[in-house]
Length: 315
Image (spheres, rainbow, N blue to C red):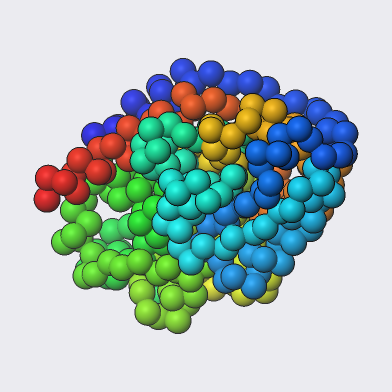
């Protein structure tokens, strides 16, 4: 089992490259366009499709205008759809959670690289998993969830499944018996809706963990739902918080031309300063832009994914 101390040590040891204040690459069609005739961007599930497409519309248009190559957005029904799209080489890039990145890396023998990761508003490069309940539920702690129902977000979600499940096991909690039942809500947004609708007593989701809790923090699912007026933070109570989780990357296939991968990295590093509204739309809140991290940054999550897969095979 990957313990809290081991994860902290691995994160501390991971090589870090500081955020770059790049300018947007010169506009125009590139030589790599003969090989990459279309830039297909995968969108994870966890939010209704109409809102995902709306958030990424200007991002798609900007990529097309910048590089003179058609760009298409593919909103998957769940996380697995994006993972399968990478494995089948039907996507060029996608914003991923760390577990999604780890599973693609394992499933494709490393045919993915982290292009950039998002930085939080305080410059940190991690986020947290939160367990929440209805504010009027009478549940005020994790102990109060004993015998209650819990909604996971998605089986390929780091904060909505892997990390809370792992940390609860580490704390000596058997999730199969501690809760009356567990189930997958179909995504982070759907999980909150299910708890508000009393289909589950509690759920887990992701947030930056910094900023005003009353506003849904600075970034994350709760912040996005507050801004869309789908949630008032006074309607829920947060009863548990995980250790820091490394922010997921915008991942790019390694079998694509190096020049393409370089352009995608430069494009994203420049995006927050050159087009702050587009940056904020795709990142679901505010932060300090993007930075470069290599694969070693995600090795703790790769180790957890391997352990989870081994545990499934042993059952």
